[in-house]
Amino acid sequence: MPMYEYQCGACGLVFEARQKFSDAPLTECASCGGSVKKLISQTGFALKGDGWFQQGYSESKAPPACPSAGSSGCSGCPKASNE
Image 1 (spheres, rainbow, N blue to C red):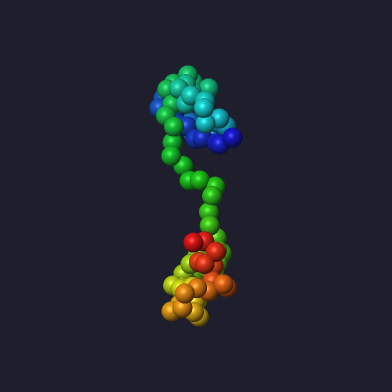
Image 2 (tube, rainbow, N blue to C red):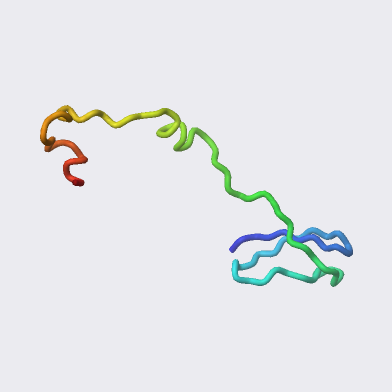
């Protein structure tokens, strides 16, 4: 379940609440009873390290040309099996 941050408009308290996606947002501060609003906070998801982009997608790599491109067919060509 995701964790959401809320801030009370009356007392300024910032607190977290673990809620389901289907749960309605909180409307009342547990401390003072004032109205609260949901905050936009940083997620826990981050891409670090070399990653897939540098390993496979950072350079333009064209597939090898079919050696018999000019002939009627190529039994070893992956395109031949898909047609």
